[in-house]
Amino acid sequence: MRILAVYSLVAVTSAVSNDVQGRESPKILLPLVINTWSFVNSTAKAWSVLYNDKGSALDAVEKGCSVCEELQCDGSVGFGGSPDENGETTLDAMIMDGTTHDVGAVAALRRVKSAISVARMVLEHTTHTLLVGDQATEFALQMGFKEENLTTANSVEIHEHWKEKSCQPNYWKNVQPDPTASCGPYTPIDVSKKSKKWATAQEGKNFNTRNHDTIGMIAIDSQGHIAGGTSTNGATHKIPGRVGDSPIPGSGAYVDRHVGGAAATGDGDVMMRFMPALVTVEGMRSGLSPHKAAELALFQIGMYYPEFMGAIVATSITGEVGAACHGFDKFPYSVANPTLQGVTVMEVLCFG
Image (tube, rainbow, N blue to C red; front, side, top):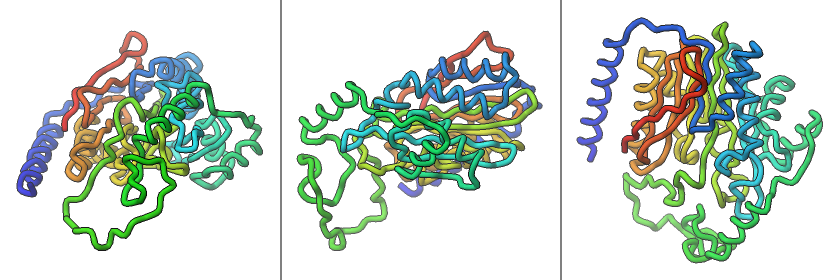
């Protein structure tokens, strides 16, 4: 198994070398919007901000992600989706300015709908990076946001159906009673006497393309200023307080004015351990194309978690775009730039 892993890494490294040597001089394709999934309404809004309104990259990301929050994209962004074990929807979001490297983020935000806008308030009105939970809510109210219920009839139904199935699936392990057949409450069991193996990494089997999504967006304005952002309501039936990769700089998204940017979606509990957005940007800094850089970042995760599900979109600072995915068949993503006829949904085949 280790020999195979080394061989695979050599193969990827060889492909990386060929990619760098064979690339032409970059063409400038700005302004640009790229985001995860076929969330075209969000792409269109961000593009309008950049192209029609001549707005900033930060404005484009905030307003583009806000559309997904309002439309409850796939039930995994915004209010009324992905209820936790208590039936509550909480929100995570981040926005990053690639010119200054400032970041604003919120996690486990409760009772406020506009998560990406609250994140921008953190960026613009504090010297902090991340606010969480009820304290993030208090900050939002102080900034003028409205407190309201994030629960909907649909999220209530999802939660009730889950309880009827003995709270399956869930995210517990090494507890009693048996979490595969019970709703708890749980207490820990002693794992010190369990046999240890080197290869014990496992992704939760309850992750799939239907119970977790994120809108991750990168925007570059005509002046070359770049911004990135994310918004999600997290994993369905998550343990209350759980935060995934989306609001973590370098994991959910990362942008650099000298290089470009990347945004990730997938099993955030796994992906945040590898900082895939940062790894992708650093790959582009080394000369890789956006596609190859994203592919390498996912390959590194797959060496530890071969069954994980995730995807990355990426763009160079000149507007060259690419994407890669792992663990499902194919991955759609949305792009708008001056050469395309409106918002275009592109698709990449996955590996792993």
